[in-house]
Image (cartoon, rainbow, N blue to C red):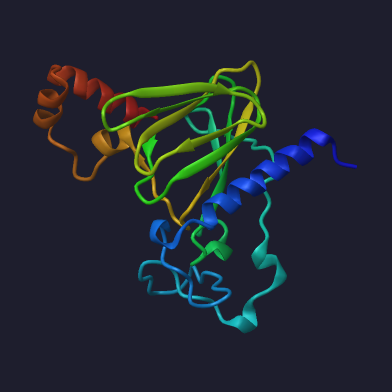
Length: 223
């Protein structure tokens, strides 16, 4: 027997999916599919704006389902764990213009400031207490602390973050109107490139000394 709260969260999650995968055609993030099903062949040697379909004869019921029920046992340096439901982790979303993830934040964990260049994000908090913040292109900061059942929206390509401000673990499910939203981490983009962005560019941009930039690089390299 399901509790009324779990049913309500499920219904809200379903509503988010519908809102994101049934936009007006002019607003869709991905091209319209040309067939009912195109389970991604992730091992294909060629990928042109997506993945080729694996043969219909190889498609099974399991291809249409994935599992977000398991709590993580390990976290990264940000006390964050990600369960992937984009095309790389859930090949059924290939050509369908939708993807979703499970993000777990341990106590004090953060999903650091980042952007998704290819998709709008809507999400629902399912556990804990999460501070969600975003910054618009005119440098206005919006934020709110969310609890289970509350929903957030991040417009495409805007910088945003999620921070666990509760006393226990937190979980939220972000959903995107694209099979591959992409992610551009603000720190990674600046300090972890190959080859490195010249220190001169970073010192002039942040108006700090060379020592500050080297300290940041060293701290990131150690993690």
